Image (tube, rainbow, N blue to C red; front, side):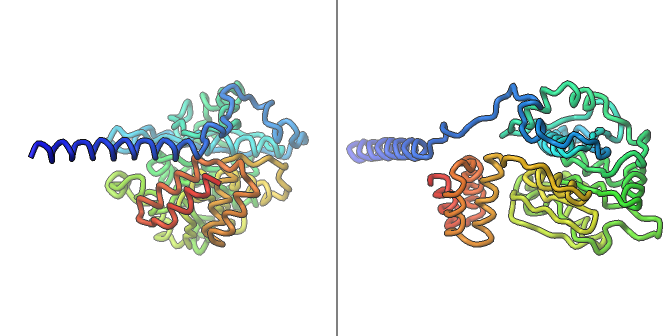
Length: 350
């Protein structure tokens, strides 16, 4: 008996060592250390698209963030997402639009600092002008919508609580939209539009094509989301008569319906802001795509045209972010899409 136990222990130790060595070799083969990392000291002057952007003032954009710090009484963090503000902020500035930041309560709003920050995110954190605006956000009740060519609603879980029923949000959106301005929102930000009615009594979203953080994305991250939130965004958007457009999980999906521009998740932020500039009548300033954006494009090719097209895209953009490709492989594996998981991790190794 003891001989069998010893042999079993040796087998277990041997298998563990083999898996450890194999896992180490696999990670080494990915060469993740070669991935460039954004400089935490980045400043606005380091952003070429901002430095070389439009100098002629074109007007103002109002960016709105949540004032809600926690999800109900759970103690779980809510707030707004830094990346959904910082990236749009510099797109607007680069294209000639001054940006004011407002929130339901005014003052300093609760912020969620994401992983995978890029130069524009660090620049925002190091920008004294932007930080002054963020520390002293305008209370929505004091906002004059006549000053703004567009209004942009930043996402974050807090928006699910203090955006839909806010009368000042409804007043501002109605005034900007009916005057011919552009309304944009990303991720959970479209919660701001749920209860907006126009002067003719019609809901702003009635019959409109719109997107936002999908049920699949919400429930993947929070299995008990239906208990945590008073509603799920996709459900409520459909209930108010809009046509919800759902793209692949955690990839850029930006939808335009007239002067209404919405994005599905944080990876839609860049394209929402640039599409808003387009909708305002301008060609957006050229900007070098981040490694994260290139990975999103590789994955978009995978879903739209298949593995071969994705491999070709990866060959065209070898600097595409490997960690994001691996994250999507992990998501696919959890969902039981083993083939997709294998092919996506293989893209990261190419």
